[in-house]
Image (cartoon, rainbow, N blue to C red; front, side):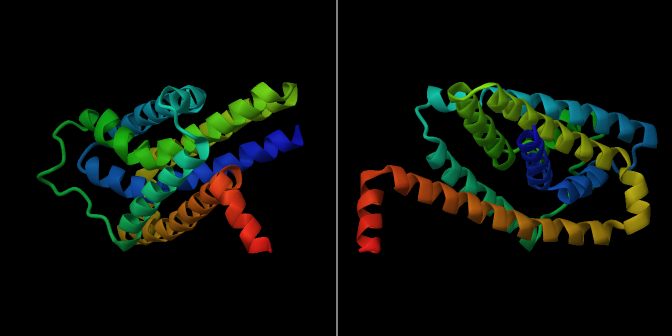
Length: 226
């Protein structure tokens, strides 16, 4: 049980940062500028539901998705890491906020696109969720009841991260008054650096695991150890 709880906590922390919460907060404030507090909170609740729905499908259908396209988990991890690295670089170096002309007249129009997808649940965020779901599902199929606990507790960690992001958006106006938009933008850039480190770790982990299972990798490791 303790291992499952630690796994859920690890997923919560990892996925919360993968959501780029301060970037999402900045985009939310820009896209809903001029709307009433009630409308903003309504949008925050509904976009959280969209994120939970997309993430749940990605988590539980991850293994089937990889099998459908004949993809290897480690190869997919490398690709996801590269995609996350690109996104993190753009986030750290600066990301333009929507202009007044690009904002929709009705804030309800931003709930699914672009706020739900791809700002929150973009490819760089969905891919790690697929990987986590696929790996834990495979272990659960090969293991016992405790492995199934880990699988479902991993989903609990995702739910916690999504709800925490939703709470951040729900209290967006209060956070803007306390910190100001400039501080939120600074936090957004700092989170980009953290995402770069996470992306580098994903790429390295996938590359080492891929080499470890391949014939070329085994020969390379033998040559290095001689």
